[in-house]
Image: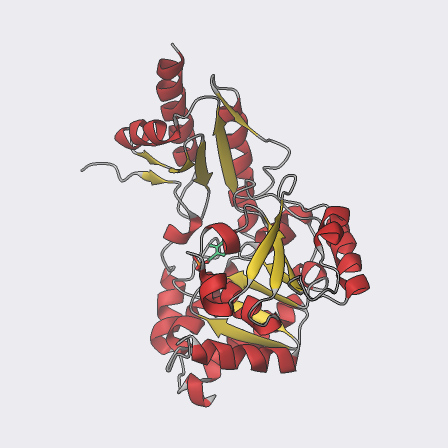
Length: 347
Ligand SMILES: *Cc1c(COP(=O)(O)O)cnc(C)c1O
């Protein structure tokens, strides 16, 4: 029997656990568009409590969570501020322009963190020539910055700017629970700095589908309407929400194991020739390897031949993500494969 590959492409590859499948089979369901699915309601309440918000909204994907968030706070012709390499700008197929009719004023972050003074400079003056700055978006953890945490102090500084100008703050917290576990701080402490925040159930938490947006009650009702407009109203969604509830009960503390494995992998890869890893930014489950030469795609191919899967996100960038389905042996296998491949490339 061939050994299955060690799959470090993303934490989204995680399959539902046996306990999730049990819960899905037994889930009590109803028509959630009519507000009658008790399991979805329980998930939304549980998620809202976790983030310290009044209400939650179960959505099919993180991309939809971001798009609903942007639309909820903007009018066509407005401008949003977001980190230059954030998911909402780089991985959502231009949807903010399509769905909300807004443009973006990007800010270059350091280790995923936007400097508050720089954000403040990018806020537009009231002027008939200028777009209106309607929203500040923060990504936590920051995916392309290597799963970097935006710590509470940085969020406080951004929050102060947002309040000074009366602009809402939105948090793409796809991996917010990773940030909370890494910082040893409750998720609600991070969410408290944002008007609206969400996290994914389908990444490190291993549920098959879904994310939950959390915010004030009136705001979430507004989001619910936008979800309907985007075709994201789901009927007996309790089937998948049930897995999300198991994810919240069983998956959060476990994220620390993923972080420890990522740290081990990051240190070993950083020691190899021709590549580097920002070890200070590597606090969670993402290891972003930077190449001196544009060899990421070729390296990914060579690693795959050795049964180790990672994603070349740019010519000089290769991403590894640790998750529930990669163990210590897989990490050692990835290190050995990378040593073989990169030693050869460097010679
Ligand atoms: C994965 C991700 C998303 C999108 O989530 P999907 O469920 O894949 O649509 C948004 N933001 C960040 C930071 C992500 O990592």
